[in-house]
Length: 388
Image 1 (cartoon, rainbow, N blue to C red):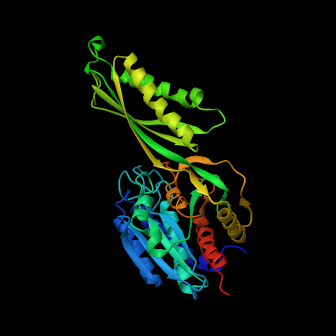
Image 2: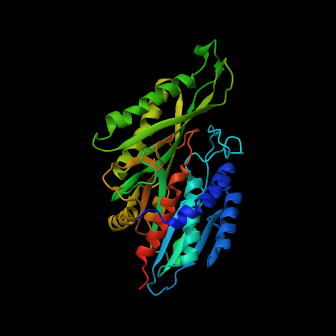
Image 3: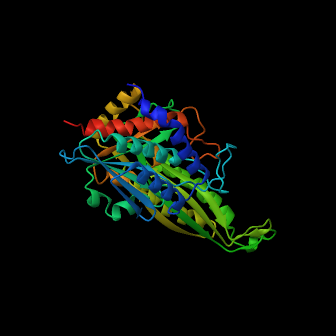
């Protein structure tokens, strides 16, 4: 069956919600306007319960089906936060907040779940309850954990979790879901190189942190290349550099490197953390400097329960036809993993077509996939909790 006719009818309205959210992006745990819009819409749909301020700035809506005899409770999750990236799309609904944009499609994820909520509140053609989870702070600040710590599971008795993320390069509206690991675990690091600042024209009187940092950055690439089993998967990326100098002729006293680690195997993670510390310390010492590592594990790998992934795929076939099941895990992380670690469920990709990549200033969520995403949520509720 193609995407539901009802969502084709609602597409213009859902696009307006999405474009409004896109034009007013908000960073992690600051999603106040977005949360208010979500709240107002859920109330207008007639949801049975709407709770705000959950997990700081999250919103939870509850819709009961025509019957509740099954006792089933399914959680559907969408993320709401934007990224600190200047937008370069030039679109009419481009960000009105300088330096902030929805470069990962969370505006689209929120809009699709809102569209599904409107339909489910109208029809209630299921036996059980749907919990709609609008999560803050997916981008590196633990929004999923904040909602779980506020009692997300215990308050509503959620038994299964499902969510989806748009994915550039997959045809628009096509779904992909695999059994087991789908996305990587993540960790962040701050590596501070301390030396002795000085005049750029007299480097022999200083301990040059810039040179030391450059050698550390290069040396860290040997972790994946020479320390980790080639059959294991790991990424170590140094992504930023900041110093206490901002001019042309000063050797900085201190430089901090910012980076991330991605992995699946906990043993690999332990090895990487040790090598990060050893390599940075000894390389800095070789240049007369010191290295101090601040290492922070973030989220576990996103692991789909095989049965839940199979159910998700069957629903996706109903909505869109062919479903991609056989593909390699990807290295970006996703804090929906925290929810899947507590209850079985699955995380799907939905194709964004031939678009700019995620976290790119020119990225734009493809509105063509909205009916497919909305339909998947609606079908999942009705097929997983059918009326007798």
